[in-house]
Image (cartoon, rainbow, N blue to C red):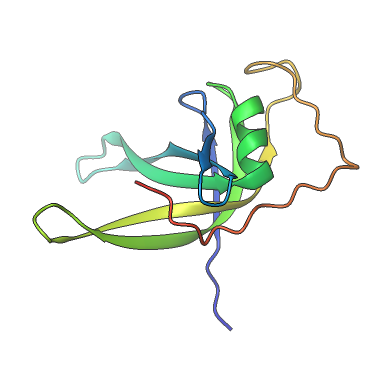
Amino acid sequence: MDLNKVMIIWRATNNLQVKTIESSWTSVVNFTVATNRKFKNKEGNVLEDAEYHRCVAYGKWAEVLAKYLNKGKRIYIEGRLRTRKRQDSEGKDKFSTEIIVDNFIFLDPKGQGGDDHVLDAAEPVVPADDDEDVPF
């Protein structure tokens, strides 16, 4: 059995904007998140390192994230890694790895980090098929 699973907690660094894939009329949102780690170097100094992650959400997930995930809000994301290959103008291969969002949980209590968010539990939220080619 294979496993491709990513779990990440971060704070939104900007507001998100939904776009539409015209060939399928599917909603998509692309965003970058940063995670930080602290460590000590050889001299015992505490340093911090940031890692940046590209994320993509489709369908209803894209719409919900863009509507309720405001700058400063904390969120837990589950997803999977996808690496895509394209060629630049010189014909060289370029690779881009991103997290495809499968599930998420807003971590801030209502009223903190932006507007309140309320999801209708009776309405199923199912991500769209992500096999569409999304431009970089």
